[in-house]
Amino acid sequence: MSNETKSKVVNEVVKANMEYANNFGDKANIPMPPGRKFSILTCMDARLDPAKYAGLAEGDAHVIRNAGGRATDDAIRSLVISYKLLGTREWFVIHHTDCGMLTFTNEIMGDLLSQSLKPATVDENGWHDTGAEDGTNEGRFINWLTISDNEKSVIEDVKRIRENSMVPNDIAIYGYIYDCHTGKLNEISQATEVGRPS
Image (tube, rainbow, N blue to C red; front, side):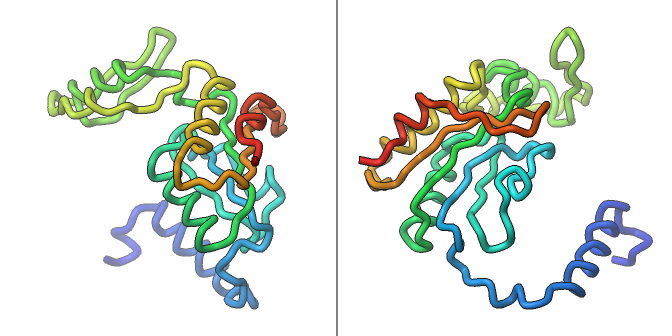
């Protein structure tokens, strides 16, 4: 595919990568295990930059991201690999203010997907479907792990990780909420207490 037929985004990404590769230096020598021996589970929200808010350089830590920063089976799978094979000893669960996962429920997502697979819109009256009638009912049978209370969700996720039989008792798990208005990480002490190593 020629550059003329690729999207603007593809061309921007490829150009940025060329510049990055040209200045790659000795990064090929960074070891696979994270140098600072910790992992972060956080949201995929584009406003969050864990490298900046946690002071990370390449090779420092594992960062696992999904919608909401939830402790899904796959996130726990990644954390266990991070510990068992790559030596991390501390884990952070970091949710954030103004998370999109606070704006809908399982029922809303199921309804939207049943109407259309096209993107939905949101306004002061809630979510609305904009596409043609090409939906699926599969979305009604998924737990989308939406959030109704940020602090409660951090505590739930730390607890879910702590109670997993593959997670050793001596791993420290911390719970935080990132404030999108200030850039500050605020500890959820009850979550950190649940995640305390024994």
